[in-house]
Amino acid sequence: MVLTDLVHGGDEKDETPNGVRRRAVLALGAVVLAGAGASGCGLLDHEPAEPPPPDPLQPLADDAVRLAGLHRAAASDFPERAAVLTPIAEAHDAHAKELARVMATAAPSPAASASASAAAGSVEDAVEALRVAEKAAYESAVQACLKAPNHRAALVGSIAAARATHLEALK
Amino acid sequence: MTGELPAALEAEYAAIFAYGPIGVKLTGGEQTAARAAEAAHRTLRDALVVALQGTGLPPARAAYALPEPIVDRASALRVAIVVEEKAAAVWRAALPATVDTQRRQALDALTGCAVRATRWRRYAKVDPITVAFPGKAPA
Image 1 (cartoon, one colour):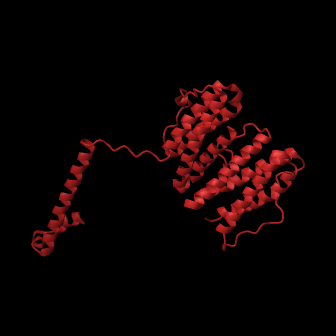
Image 2 (cartoon, chains in turn yellow, red; image 1 turned 45 degrees about the horizontal axis):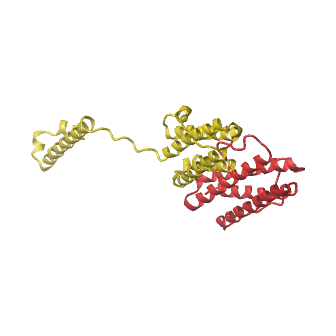
Image 3 (tube, one colour; image 1 turned 120 degrees about the vertical axis):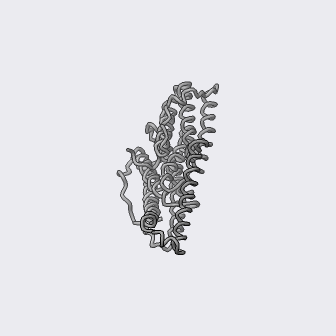
């Protein structure tokens, strides 16, 4: 449209009210383009890029990594309970991996949680500490499931339910 | 809210049906657990009947197919595990079709089924007693 006007708009026509309006439109377009160019440069050259907001599932993934480490440490300290604790640690690993997949972030390595320590004297104290951690993580997962968009509800719901079964398994 | 809740209702009818013969073959604490499980499924069924009122909800059938005949304690425990796993699956499938209060109900139902399945696996000495993603079909 603008190009057509430039090509076909002769001198005679430019003296008409329509011609004046065309020139005004062209001038306005130039100002808008200049403004857009300037603000684009400003974004690129002077302002740091805004980091994307964290995914609402990130705290759930962080919990999973932390809990995996706690269970692995307890299984190492109390081998007699490893038959229950190791599958729970592996479930948390699987949760962390699946959450990373749906958030499209890098999957955490199991080693990331290796430094966790149960630091509890008796097996009863260690299991009780795990129960407290699982209960808090279950409640976080329930809230996350209630807020989750439909396409994430089943995954987050399964994770909440799994954490509840860990509480049962730790009885 | 399309076919997910009627499917959950079907699974609840089937669970209530199965727990009758299951309870007969169990004793002591296991029988108490079976009765409590049956009561929990009746509560879930009743809530679904209310939620589906006026939608032409499926009526309960006279009998439901069991995954295997219940002839002794071991088969009763195996069927109880399967019943809870199947119910967990339909409740998990209902989650994406729900919001707010109904999602909370579906999540609590999924969680209850998953916890009971864990309890039955412990009684049956199935190892491990937990699964990573309750209600999700194994990959």
